[in-house]
Length: 240
Image (tube, rainbow, N blue to C red; front, side, top):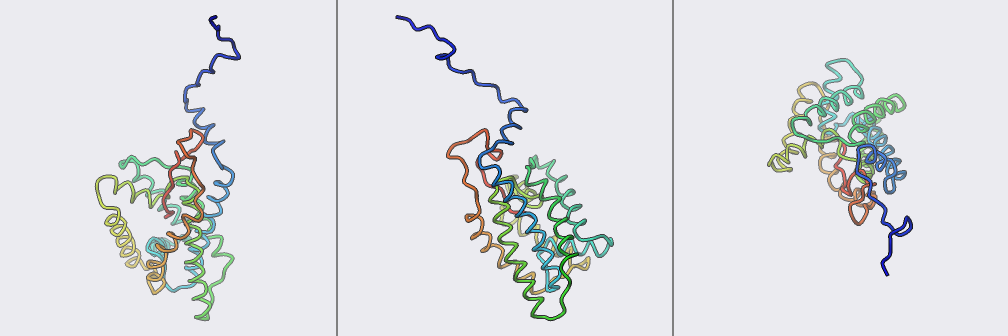
């Protein structure tokens, strides 16, 4: 006997993946609440960690040497410079055909705001031992923040997206990353940014810290590609 499909037995039609449905999928993604909280807490902590290193006055990471040098030359708060540079770097994504994510845009804005807010709350200490406490605390917090932000899987920050975009053009990631960091460090030093022992400590510490923290904080992706997962199950890159 033939079975005539009814509404109960007929397979449901698959709706086309329209832009509206894709946006809705992003808003109902897998583990989305945890990922959003982790993303924004991580970015705020990243900005706070940069402020602690600024207050320590013992040397900054290469990008913040550049940001501080520009801030001193232009006369604007360093957080504003961080935001401005992030936006300019995002413009360089266009010829590289890089696509920003939620983490990218949030990174460009929140880190600078958190940096300036922390500078207003934390005074610059005079005792050398206290400056070292701030420096080491800043480096450690930066490592945790890096793991949280990347582990949320919402896309790379503007500076790291520049690196991955250039690397995708056939260049070595190691060469591209080293070249960018040395260039901004040299430019920042010439502009008056602070280079010191803290710069070296950050350079040798952030890699191992990120290596430890990223797996610890990474939110597991679905076993297979899930349209509700805004990142397609891929991890983001470090904030910068």
